[in-house]
Image 1 (cartoon, rainbow, N blue to C red):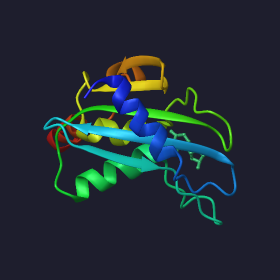
Image 2: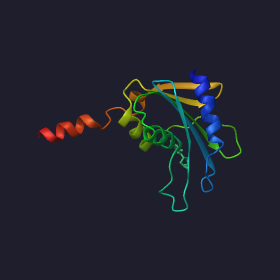
Image 3: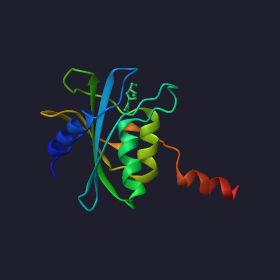
Image 4: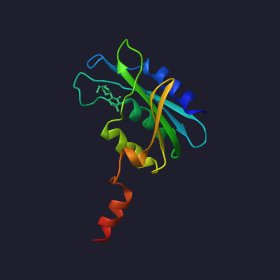
Length: 139
Ligand code: THU
C-alpha cells in the first residue's frame, strides 16, 4: 500500500461524510501494521459537540475490531462539492493518534496527487500520554 493509494482511499471515504452543518467533508484511511485499512469520515450532529472527525471514526472502527498497531493515516478534506485538499488533523485527533501510535507514525496530508508526509512527533510534540500517568503514580 503506497501513501498515494492510502490517500485515494481517504478521498473515497470523504464522499460518505455526514456534514450537513459545516458543509466541510473529511475522509481518512488508517493503515495497520499488518496491512489492513480502516476508513472513516466526519459524522456531524445537530447538537454539534457529538460530532466525530474522520480520523477518529477510522481509529475507533479499527480499535473496536481488535487492531492496536498502526503504520500510517491519510487525511483529506474540503468544502462539500469541491475537490479534496489539505486538511490538518484537529488537536483531539492528534491526541487519539498519540494514544495508539509512536513518534514515527506517518500522517499523510493533502489530496490525491499532492501529498505531504509528517511524523506524529512533529504534529504533536511533547504530548501527554501513558508515560505521564506512570510518573504521576510515583509522586
Ligand atoms: N473535521 C475532521 O473530520 N477532522 C479534522 O481533523 C478537522 C475537522 C471535521 C469536523 C467537522 O465535521 C468539520 O470537519 C468542520 O470542522
